[in-house]
Image (cartoon, rainbow, N blue to C red; front, top):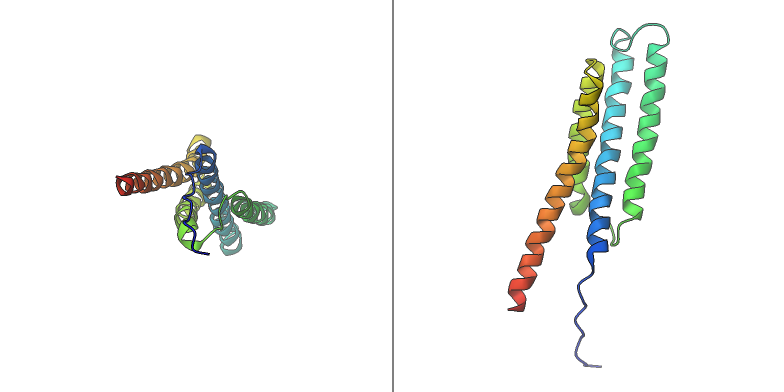
Length: 148
């Protein structure tokens, strides 16, 4: 009953890659949902923002497609996670993705150049991946100091 506990060997690099991929997918999904909210709100508030005629209906259809895609991306990020997902772990990807989604939605409505629209999801995914990499490196350093 009281046998000594074996130490679990540290996992390889595949888990680290999955954590980064999970965070990037969750950030892009959150970005899509925030952009859907901006476009949906713009299509309801003023038809001048999205063009006349079929503009508001197409904007609402595009917003609905973005929301569904973003929701499935967040679910996919939770499914590929090697450990149970908690709010504290996914708060940063959700916040970074939402901030970039609101900015991208505003730029989309302001008719910004297309190259500028591609930078926002990439910036959200890069920010989240960088912060998660730094957090893992800091925790790995703590483990090394404890072993000494």
